[in-house]
Image (tube, rainbow, N blue to C red):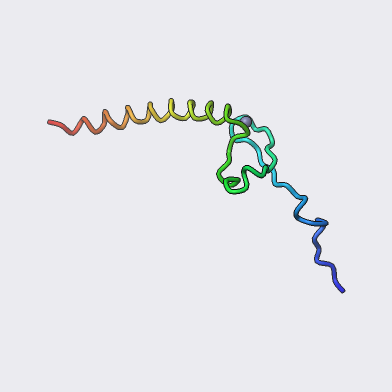
Length: 75
Ligand SMILES: [Zn+2]
């Protein structure tokens, strides 16, 4: 008999972990994230809001630039 080379006793007890993209804190898989784990990026609602505010501020500046370039076409 050969071993499978798997060191985990049972994968049921293994919980995935990944860092929050906003604060870098390690998040551990939770049951409520079972369906959305791949989409989860922030450890908390607060991090999500703060990251969103920073993003929207940046994209606002991009928008203003693009609009002024488009307006240049009118003659
Ligand atoms: Zn966070």
